Amino acid sequence: MFERSKLTTADFDAVSWHDCHVHGFSLEEREHGTAELSFDIDFIVEWLSHADRPFEFRVAPATLTFHAVFGLRIELDYARVSAATEPFMIDGIERDLLASTDATPAFMWRLPITFPGGLISFESTGFTQVVRSAPLLVPRQCLLAEERRPHVDA
Image (cartoon, rainbow, N blue to C red):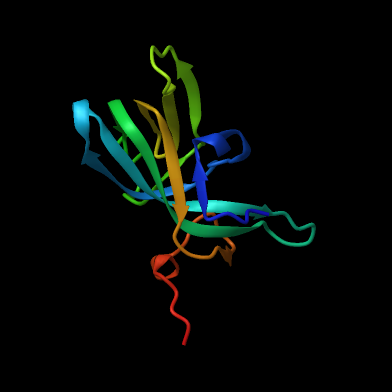
């Protein structure tokens, strides 16, 4: 089970973002024409398969930030499938190492969009992901609005 609240590029091969929902994204300008690209996601920490009932999921709100982003391309088409405008769902995250002339590696990142269809792609040096609150056990792959709010113990 997932026990860490912070992940980095070094963790890439051990993490899956399959079917994570994206509630929003933002760009923060940086030097040399790059940006920090942050996604507000429902991170599926664990898929629980049961023989006698449907899947359950441990899901936590998280911020996934890619650093030194360049060449951003976003393709989302809700109109093509006559879909409700709701959080989009990524199929996962793919990367390819780019040729680099300095000590900092760079990657081409691809986030295929399962629903409503599309692709987000860009170059970046890597990412940081921070889970913002403890995972909740839910019968779906995403959280409801009230479940995404920070939990306050009474």
